[in-house]
Structure formats: C-alpha cells, structure tokens
Image 1 (cartoon, rainbow, N blue to C red):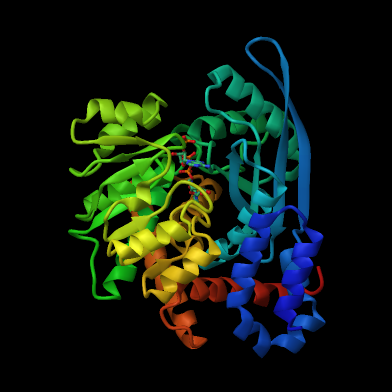
Image 2: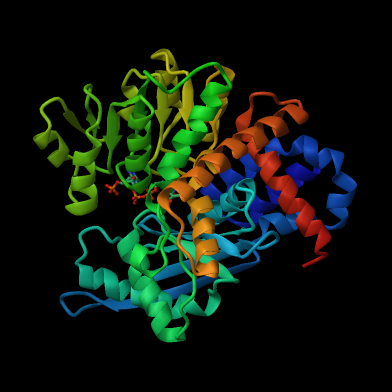
Length: 444
Ligand code: NDP
C-alpha cells in the first residue's frame, strides 16, 4: 500500500464517525500523491503525514450558561489546535447546532493549508460549539460567550492561538468573548480577530472573505481569457461571506441573482439588492422572506434550489457539502463555466470530480476564501504595531494576496503536471511550506 493510502486508512480507522474529516484528508492527500512519492523516504522517516493528520492539541469542554427563563443550559465547546509549524494557531469559531469533533477537525485541517497559502505566518486551528445563537436574546448570547471563553482562555494568546468568527459568530460574539478574555487575564492583546473598530479591529475585515473570493475569481477568469463583468452569478448563503461576495460581484460588473438561508432561497432576476439584504440580515437579523416581501422582482422558494438557476458562475457561500452531484449536473447542463468555493468544502468529492471532468474552472475554498484569515493576520499585525491601517491599505493588500495565491497554486499545479487543477495546486502549494517547516523543526 502506498504511504498516502496507508495514512487515509489510518485516519478512517482512528477517527470513526467523522466523515467530514475523512473527506478532507482524502481530498488533500490524493492530490499530494506525486509530491509524497517524490519525497517518500524522508517523509516516512520523520512520520510527516502521521503528524500532519494528528492535531497537536484538542480541547473539548463543558459550557454551562443560564437562559432567560432561569434554566441551566449545557453546550459543548471545542478548540482544535492542529498545526503550529509556521505560526500561532489561527482559525474561526463556529456556533451552530451541527458542530461536533469531526466538523471542527475537518475545518482545522483545511485551515493549515489555507493559512499557508496566504503567505503569512499563521498556523491552523478551529473551534466552536453546538450552541445556536439564532433566536437567543443578546443577554443569552453574552452569557454563553462568557462561559465559553472562561474555559478556553487558558489555551489562547496573541502568540499562541488567535480565533476569529465563522458561522454563527460575528462581531457581536467576538466582542463578548474579547471582553471576557480581557476581564479574566487583565491583558489587552490581539487574541481574537474580527474585533470592532473601536477596540483593535481592522477596517475591511468584515468584507475580507467575500471580497477576497471575488478578487480570486477575477484573477482566475482573467488568466482564462474571461471576466466577471457582465456575467450572471448564483450565490448561496446570506451571511457574512455571501453578502460581501455579492457586493464585490456587483462592484466588478457581475450580476448576482440568488442568495439563501437555511429555510429557503431567493431568485431575483434584476440582481440582488445588497443594501436591502444587509438591512435584513445584519441589522434586523431576519429571514429572507422579508427580502421577497420588500422587493417585487424577487421570488422566494422554500428549501434548497439555488443551483437550479441558469448562471455563468456559481459561488457557494453557506456551508459544507451544499453542492452535490445533482447540483453539479444541473449547473453544467445550464452552461455554468466556473465554480468558486466561498464556504469551506461546499462541494462533495464526487461533484468536484464531475465539475473538473467537464472542464469547469474550479476554485477550491482553501484558496478562494483565504482572504478572511489573511486580513485577520493583518489585524494581528496592526495590533502588534498598535496602529490602524486605512481601508484602502488593507483592501489593497488583500487584493494582492488573493492574486498571489492564485499564481502560487497555478504554478504548483503546472510544476506537478496537473495544469488547471487548482484544487490540487492549492493543496500542493499549501503543503510544501508546512512540510518544510515541520521537517526543519524536528520531531515535535
Ligand atoms: P454566517 O453565519 O454569517 O452565514 C452562514 C449562511 O449560511 C447563513 O445564510 C446561513 O443561514 C447559511 N447556512 C449555514 N448553515 C447552513 C446549513 N446547514 N444549510 C443551509 N444554509 C446554511 O457564516 P459565514 O458567512 O461567516 O460563513 C459561511 C461559510 O464561509 C462557512 O463555510 C465558513 O466556514 C466559511 N468561511 C467564513 C469566513 C469568515 O470570515 N466569516 C472565512 C472563511 C470561510 P441561516 O442564517 O438560516 O443559518
């Protein structure tokens, strides 16, 4: 059995009931086959792959809190510090009822390569809880966040582990966690990113993931003799990532015609009204039915269906495995020519293979959505300097980082004989830097 196959089998055996983690390990290691074969002796000697797929540390803890009725509630908290070879652990905190060890492990594993691709000195980690902020009062969200950080603070620090937001964790939750960290430790340090502007946050962090996805897409299209201008785009989700991907698409002359939440989806042939969407999602925290009620051109549909719309480009921005084989077939049949992954691992393995076989330009999430963590790292730099950069400066750096990421993975794919396979290129480019640092640092 090859080294790669041995490790995949070991991961499946040692991590039962964690299909998302198996999925990402398979996807990454399959595309590293050529690289591993070239360096097999050295990698085996240092058990490089065994160490890569085993997190450096996993913390799982109880999060007790009291709801508005005075009842005690108990959730589970997670932080997986996966790999610190190239910098302190960095990765978001997800608050969603679906969170479990396997989901956090999959996200943490992806984060290692994504962070490496940014070219910035950040290691990979991820955390979260099965807590659902939806429908909770501000007080309930605050006491939950305080309880969560009261345990987790022991493992965090500006040079140790710096979490950020993710699904269900926005500026409000980051603010509550930051306040509690400061209260417990008496330390004013850049221990979380995505902070408010008045206490160490970075301009353009809120926009970074969504804008970065579109900067990446624009460069990929440019290098394939195309352009986002004039193209119809379907986007799923209506959270932080989706909203700013929609906004940048419009700014670059594209037309986003869909968005969704976990109840249903919108088709707006006139193009999504992003200001209305922001008002509904960021200010009122309401459902998409309100968008349709306020906008005569829009249709609201219950359930799933975003990928049934005829578009040129599809950009999933909601959650993992949201684009499946049937969706991929429908997109191809409708003439879609590019899929850009905004959410983490939104496309199933078989749908990814199908899209690649059909010659669809396919941008993997660990590259396309790396703008969020990149600007988080820029927030860390500003905190260390005790300075704040202008929006233009941060946005300019973000744009350059996304263009560099595209060329980095495009070059890696060519070098290993997989021209145009951007998913493989991203894995190879991200892996090589981490592997080099791990080998240099000895058996740790
Ligand atoms: P938000 O919580 O702001 O928004 C998530 C959106 O996706 C909401 O519209 C939500 O609908 C929908 N959604 C979530 N889970 C499901 C589900 N199971 N089925 C259908 N719809 C769902 O999260 P973000 O926008 O921050 O994150 C979106 C994706 O992008 C995630 O994969 C995240 O890991 C990834 N990402 C985020 C980064 C960031 O900077 N925020 C950085 C890099 C990646 P509803 O409101 O109804 O739940």
